[in-house]
Image 1 (cartoon, rainbow, N blue to C red):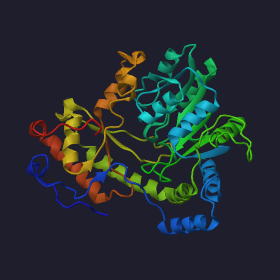
Image 2 (spheres, rainbow, N blue to C red):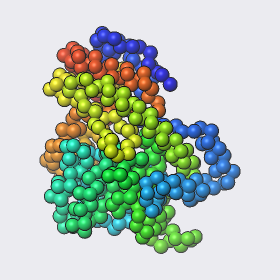
Image 3 (cartoon, helix red, strand yellow):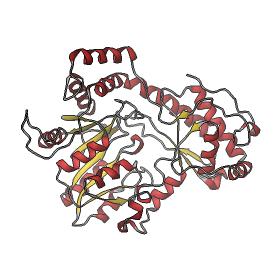
Image 4 (cartoon, rainbow, N blue to C red):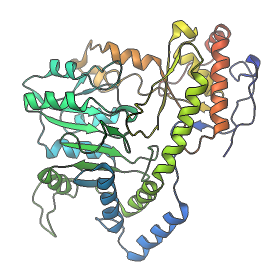
Length: 412
């Protein structure tokens, strides 16, 4: 649905100067992709008619089968969300001590480890891939290291080969947070079958969603059994509790939405790709802006439009541009500012005192994530680009106008 109502043709039209916002309702980064509504209602009716609402019913079984087939993994275990999934995998692997992981990730990645009693050891990233630098990882390995947790950031894969080599050399476990990476590949192989296990998110804002949900994929038979056991209170059969567990199960309603989303995934990706190409083509001529590129030799879901701002060339810092966009009801985001190592509880813990991650911090100071998905129409994308162009071409006046406004909230 087109929500744009006020065009922007000159500097004085910008809302930060006093004009009307370009959009009459907020244009979000993570507005959900909605699949076939008729099919979803049919599936919900089937769930209600069956009387089987949770505990590994037909919808969950189908969802697990489809995710396994899509990723090429031998096993898939559906869970209530990816955060719980990461924790269950770490527990099933018997990890204790430290986990080397990036700070350039959503804080849930770190929280999942900390919640399990593990200590995140934040590592810097490669400036090109924005994912874990295998050389930096190896430098951080100690006798306390239990494993490595890589993140396929914004759908762009980790250096799977490099991290796997480090893990093998030191006998470490290796997990991948694949929350952003459904439908993506690494060297022609679908993400989902690397490391000891990979964990996908099916949160409402992801390319395919199950309202809330996650999926753990692995090729390890024993590990898959332990994961399924631990996600169901430690039950093996009826009334037979054999180990410590928790409630990590996905409900039938969530799985029904997940199945509909998987059936619509190619259409979702097509919308994302259309928006990505449009953003790239329009903003390519703007000095000081660069869109983080996708590797065209791989399969991509194009779900994150990440723009990096070079203040020296644009004359405008990232937060001022973000303030301009937010004034227009374009709710662009700073992903994942300011970095896990600079939020609580980590920044107050002695282990992280004075921690500097120069590449991570530079990336986090420069990026903006722009709206995309099926809810963002071509006209919306063109308008967002026009706002950005007007702001940069009038950088000095924009800086003055932004300074006169309230500062961005901490969680912007």
